Length: 114
Length: 112
Image (tube, rainbow over all chains, first blue to last red; front, side):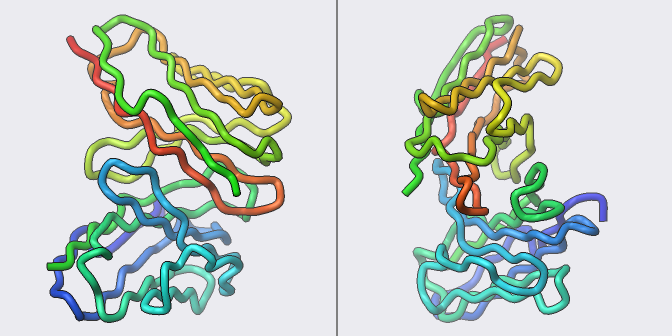
């Protein structure tokens, strides 16, 4: 596609529920990143993929968070047993290869856990 | 661990004044530095990318400098306009790693 696409743009859920956030990167971009941003702060790294594999998942806060990219294109961030503290903007970004070129971000998925 | 700092956190200027935004980082072993713009509730838009071997990049009214040895970058926006009001974020990629580390951003308001 022309840009990075994220769905849903907004998600409101109840504490304890399961949530999936989807990211469709720019066509041909092999590197895909997930970031989380709380209000008034800079984005914090969660995980990145080079192709299908998670090259660095050191930013995932705990084992309730998981991400996949089975075919090296679309990625899904999965959050189990959501907590109120998970409320944030979840941003996805892609670039042509790791460490090459600009990073392009999607519009984000705003998650609110009630 | 790389830390990126942006001071001030917020800035208000009258229209027409030049903007100077600062970014500092603790580990000078970077691969590149990127400046982004973020409008409220939106994603990030890339403004400029500076490779570690470069000292500056320019695009229209925007100019970004990089002094790797001192761990600093500055974004200049000439002749500011109300449409420049947004949060500006800098981010660095370490030479030994592949993820971007972001500063907290500077929230800019340009008053007409």
